[in-house]
Length: 576
Ligand code: TNX
Image (cartoon, rainbow, N blue to C red):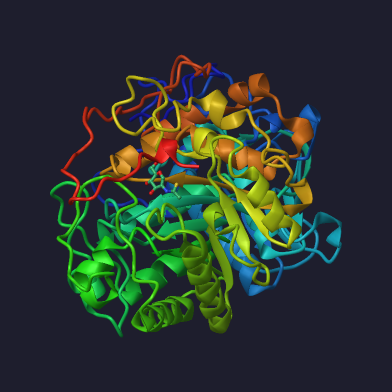
């Protein structure tokens, strides 16, 4: 990977060979030496590259007013000043940590509140709540950058925008010679929807804590604020429950194919939650019920309808397993599990799944869901579930997650919304990031169709589900199921570049929606991902720059398969 801008070239941020990275071999130079060397090298470039355009940000900001007369060059001695508030200072420190490696500048953080420093970055809390709880104002002038917000979350989003305004080489893990130029002007920004999420299925394949943290970083870049973890399924149970140790000791040891599985200890889970919280991301844990429970039944056969432990399941079919809705021990189990997961989770949500329980039908299903909704309420959390929950009675604040691919369940879903439910929109045929991009995509599924970047982008969460008004839409989420996804590189390949598309639907005002414009803005992110070492799909729909782009394409050609354990599952696409 190379990270050097070539002289005089605006569009070749990753072009190799013109200047060497500052050598880190031998004894380590101190930060000031690095900073001086970087500045000197930058000064030697024949002509500075044109700065990124202010309007190139993804997701598109609400208002952008470029002012080229105010372009600003980040100097080696720049200081980051933040309001004297621990959360604001934490954002400043994170920003400094993101900018130090590539610039080599020391970027000290101080807590002098007040006016922007000369030649520096100021992160300022204000009580002008016109910006809303997540909004920010960002101004680049000839003397520096000021980000203003009502909350630390707003400052954090402003800081993400600021990163994107620097040249792509800012993603380099080592110092590079670059004109760290920011485009002058101002941005006023706030999100369209309060819930902007992605889901990672850690049940079909298990992913280590480090992988999850990196996914969290990816969400944060694009101003997503929820990470939904699909923690349990037929193929594995991934979170320790102290009162039911066999869930992970037994149920955690399998995954799709022949892999070893794995699970998160409570300390692991807390680490994920804290890392996410530091990036203003709320973790939404999902315990999928009553179906998708084979791993739990293997561990605790008394939950099974016939009280016999089924064999472990490592295939990819769905809909065959369920916990016994007629046995009181099932509800004791659920109360224990949800109680422990709720206690570990600072966020307000508990996701109870509810999808594809093909063998628990009609009133038995709704009765089960209503009981589980009451158990969730007893934990103090708000229930979230897949939209199959709709026919069950309303529970205070409940949220349904729409994953339909056609209008079929929209009437029952709209009816639930009339009773007070809110909706997270994740249409299978637009937002399911486990779908292939194209027929030759080496991993992924296609039951909901192929989802290229345009298909991921060109829909409107506010009006997608017939009969559900925009006011009832809490937001949008992109799920990544992992039946065929086995590594971090494959995760990234499926997320990029579609995750930014979904993020824009969740954040940006509808008035900014424009495929041609999005495609052009997205193109500039390719060199950023390349420099950051992020694997992505080099989609032919996006006019990537001709240099500075590289992408490792996963090449595994097949889905792991295993015979179904005796039951005949109904293909998902045929389900109402
Ligand atoms: C449907 S979406 C499922 C999952 C699968 C996914 C594969 C939903 C609520 N259930 O069990 O993993 O399709 O795309």
